[in-house]
Length: 257
Image (cartoon, rainbow, N blue to C red; front, side, top):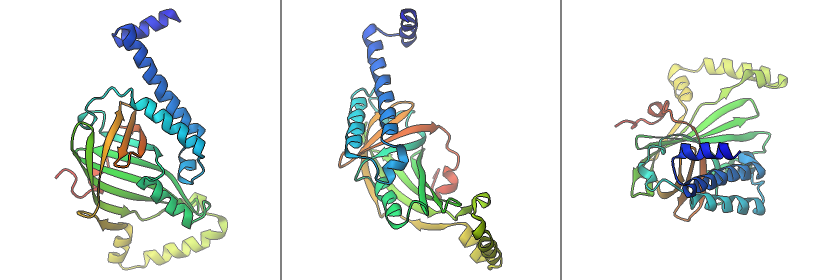
């Protein structure tokens, strides 16, 4: 074990104090991820099943990791761009507010928010909420925004467009008693005039330019975890999925301009 520790320290290329600090940071990251799991994960968060004790425990671990941040200018760091998965958002965050609207109006057996992810690339962001209805119909709600650097820690987000994609039916999961209804609906849809059919297929688009914006700061960033806080100090924690940018141009008409 002592030999292994010496090898790890040599790989870090620093002093014993530097090595100890890095081990503390890695331990804090693991502790935070375990706290998410203990709190019930994403599903418990969006359905309001997390307890006060679980929320304060997660928040304590968030602040513990933030103080170990090694990225002094996260807004211009190469770590920032890529695809991220939402693990946690605070009680007053927009993400949790939108999720609770869904679950307050529809029972969990009817509507389910399975995950939310974020794609950041070249000054644009795309938040995608993955929805499932009746365990058979899948859809996505996509919010496209323009982000700009306001300082070493601070960024501004301006909303560009919201899209509710046309549902996709997973035929294998349709209950037997609903399959005839689905077949009739599919036949009716195919008989619609082409312009109407194309409009339905492209989903519902709502332009948002010049309507909403928000400021936020990045309080922690490394190659695996991103923590941001809004103007009220409410944290959102994301973990990296991958660093690809596929799909940004198709979703955002202004991407790359």
